[in-house]
Length: 319
Ligand SMILES: NC(=O)c1ccc[n+]([C@@H]2O[C@H](COP(=O)([O-])OP(=O)(O)OC[C@H]3O[C@@H](n4cnc5c(N)ncnc54)[C@H](O)[C@@H]3O)[C@@H](O)[C@H]2O)c1
Image (cartoon, rainbow, N blue to C red; front, top):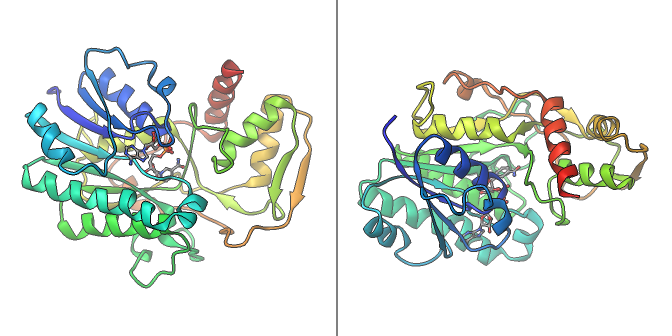
C-alpha cells in the first residue's frame, strides 16, 4: 500500500493513540495534533519518538490549522478528526466551548480540506446523535433534525455528521460504547468498563445507577481501528473507502449488571454491587443497527470477554 500522510487529531487520547499506532505500523506517516485537554503524553509512549510521527501541540480551534499543516506536509491527504470534548456532563456545563471544539472546528476543517483537495476526511460521530431513541436497534436514519438531544455534545456531533452527509464526501463513524486499554478510568465521566475494571482490581464496590438492566453496545478498540481503516480506504484487506454516515458497534446489547458480573469474575474481585437511584436523562438501552457497516465487510473480531481480558490485563499492568 502507498505510504500516506495522515492527520490524526486527538492523538494523545484513548482512540487516537491506538489509531496512530496502527497507521504507523502499516507504514504511514502520522501528523498528530492534541492540546492535552483530556489526553496524555503517556498514551503516545509507543510512537512519540518514531520517525514517522510528527507531533503538534495545538488546539483544533486554531485558525488556519489545516492550511498551515498542508503547507508543512504538502502530501497530507487523509484527515481523521477525533479531537473533541468527550464528556457529556462537561458539555452541558460548557455549551459554547463544546460547540466551538466539537462542531465549529470540524466545520472549518471540512471546508479547508475540500478547498485544499484533501481526499479523505473521517469524523468521530457518536450514538449521542440519536438522543433518547427507543426504537432498537438504532438505524442511521433515526438521527434527524427533529430528534431532541439532551447535550451540546450530541448536538455538535450531529451537526458535524450532517455536514459530512450533505457534502457527499467524507465519512462519519457513529460509535456506540468503545472500550479497551488506555481508556482513562480516573475521570468521573469515564466509560463504565474502565471504571468497573478499576474498581474490580482495587476490590471496591461497583456502583450501578438504576437496576442494572440498562444495556449498551460495547465494541473493543482494535475493531474500532479496523472500521477507521475501512472508512479511509487504508484497510489492508481492501475494504472501503466509505462516504456518508455509518453506525459502528456489535449490534449486541450487554446489561450493566452482566458487565459487572463478568468483570468481577475475571478480576477475581469480591462481587458487590451498590445500587443507586437512576440518573436523570440516562438512556435505558442503546444498540446499533450495524447492517450498513456490515455490508462493507466490517465485522468485529474480538469477543466481549476477550476484550475485557485484554483491558483487565492492561489495567493490572498500570497498578
Ligand atoms: N470512547 C467512546 O466510547 C466514544 C464513543 C463515541 C464517540 N467517541 C468519539 O471518539 C473521539 C475520541 O474519543 P476518546 O474516547 O479517545 O476520548 P479522549 O478524551 O481519550 O480523546 C480525545 C482527545 O482529543 C483531545 N482534544 C480535546 N480538545 C481538543 C482541542 N481543542 N484541540 C486538540 N485536541 C483536543 C484531548 O486532549 C484527547 O487527547 C471523540 O471525538 C469522541 O467523541 C468516543
